[in-house]
Length: 482
Ligand code: NAD
Ligand code: USQ
Image (cartoon, rainbow, N blue to C red):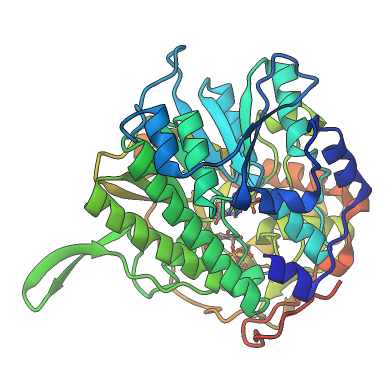
């Protein structure tokens, strides 16, 4: 990461970000933004918002000592009890809880009376600074978000700021929080980001694969009953010319039959990192008896959930730029500012999609119905399939109803992907567990478009056209054009 910063960009922090850090009560520790990324390497810093005094953040320092020593001192066995807390509530660690899906999920689970801890190194906010991007919606600092949640609901969310690639940090958080379940959203999740240059490709695979491997080791070592709910992606499967099953396919070959992991044909270094994760998780389920659910999620759209709508300081991020923005969210913002909808290539690219309100529901269902010891369970997490062309047509119709003039252009495809293909992916397992989908409807599109219109003054139209090419990726560290 240090290499990325020094080689390819200068880090400029906005005044807003500086202010939010300054307001933390950090005792004698000098806290600079770069500390956030580096602190967990050398010494462990734990920031806990425990909420006796909601106006103030409590800082607990715990200098890391060799793990074996500390484990002996604490438990004598090296294994944590997988128990509920004194109040009988189950404890869920949300890794990546400051991000788009993670923040909505952390609030939802807290609202449902789970004891929640967010673990995040805030690197997603750093990517924005690196690349000169910003969320459409203004987002409060993680400290202010949690403080506001406490003030509104009386519910505490614990906060651990650090990098899960730093095992010492992760081990401390496990031993301190003792989760019954870990929901792991904490990865670099943009396909275009992973295709900018060699250093971003390497960062993505290192961050995602090593982070997940560390989570698996932490569960084995400190909480072997703990259920891992891992965010995978539908993109692991690619676009095969046969139906996509949920994780496994039964094949008969030369007269013999077996049920095997469904073949993976990922389309970017990011999507490949998810394939590597899935293999590592499957192996540790077999070898160590880990219980895991891989949620192969489709493309998420929307912004409001019941909890994030409660107050502007709880508002979720909403990315519309060509690196982090996902396609339907981007189309709504493009329509709101009068930019033609950017269909890449022929527009027949078909994917599974879901409303962010269903992301939080699916994760809750997975936690409430845990996998068995040694089980590697795979759910395809989406509710409907659309082609990019279908989405452009739906946004055009909804925009016209609101009096917006919406045009579509075909942009030369910056990616390497099939532009017309068969796509039929199964997605029944979450429905069987009780998922009640929010389908993409006219009223949802109206409200998303209205939301985009409300914030359109914040749109930087220079960030809309794609500038990352799958074919031009090279070893030279690139500064993405502002
Ligand atoms: P996001 O970038 O908004 O959030 C990810 C969060 O993880 C960020 O807050 C980031 O700071 C944190 N993080 C990253 N690396 C970390 C590390 N090493 N240690 C600690 N924290 C770290 O992404 P999102 O859109 O919320 O996606 C969350 C997960 O869901 C990802 O794994 C992604 O692959 C998956 N997913 C997302 C979508 C989508 O459309 N957004 C679709 C399918 C799957
Ligand atoms: N696309 C356009 N125009 C745009 C943006 C995208 O035509 O302006 C096309 C892309 O070429 C692609 C499709 O829309 O064919 C989806 O692209 P996307 O950027 O919305 O989604 P993707 O890159 O696949 O990644 C997103 C999330 C990722 C998640 C994935 C789920 O960023 O974290 O894993 O969706 S899935 O697509 O099922 O793999």
